[in-house]
Length: 64
Image (cartoon, rainbow, N blue to C red):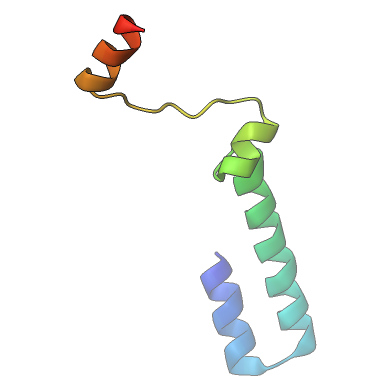
């Protein structure tokens, strides 16, 4: 949807089309943020990143 708005602005060059694209793009980025698509957003939401550990790391942790 943002592609069509950007394309329309590139064709017409109208300021109202530019504002429409900027508004739509901002709403899109806000929605991605609310879903936790960046590490900062995930930490704000209280979601932890899962880190895979190797067998060697598990054995070292068990030994400690």
